Length: 340
Image (cartoon, rainbow, N blue to C red):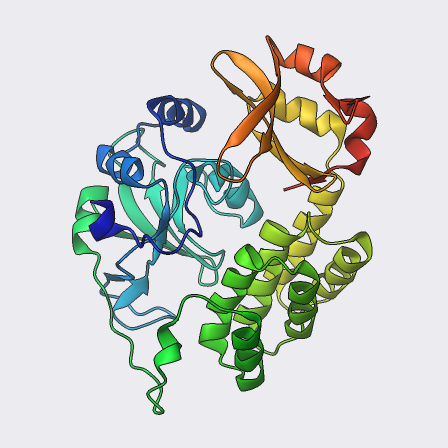
């Protein structure tokens, strides 16, 4: 099914392969029974872009008159995951009981568990209009109705219009052309895949005062979600000040969310581990994860495609008391880490 449903050439939103243990843990944390068809597609590929991009509706939105954009589905994992729902619902002031599996802040598609703990209907959430509309009775029905909407190319018949991979030159040309729709997707791409973070930050600073709210929200979202731990303190503070003074309340909210990340304390780490949350952070150019699996607590380092367990402990308390980074106790170096 992956070759039919998932867009295999783009790894954005794609997480590590799903296991039964991960499903069981997610259902325990969310206190719901996830739809079997959702689990089935995640076992083919754990989240990502899909070969379908639209879902038919019978009401108009800011996107179109008869469909909504649904070109990705969140999997189960550490970020860009349905496990982010509780946090996102709080930040965007949405009702509890929704589990978000597609969206970007302004609009979402979600499982509606507000009155059930299994067999949820599917709803469309528009935070700008403050509306929640049922669009499907089940996730199975939702999958069956997804389709590919063909978008008309520009008058120049530019074949590059539909490209998904953006190099530096491509991005700078788009910036000069001010192609708002394609710029938005290019912002997502370069924040995830461009290794020259200094170059990315310079381009994003240029766009952080763009007149289009959608672009500024895209910049703020990707600085918070992908870049904040990679930027030097001076640059991140510059972004925070720009976002804090933005005319859009959503952009201002991202400034607060970045500040929360930058001020994440050791006490907050303890609290999150008590809730069995996975914590990811950067330290001295390496990416680390603290999580529980195989009945042990681990500090692991990201090794390219998979995590490598560096230290393992019988309890979270042992980890907090005995774990080290670079030969120093974890607590002593915590003020030098950056939360992902």
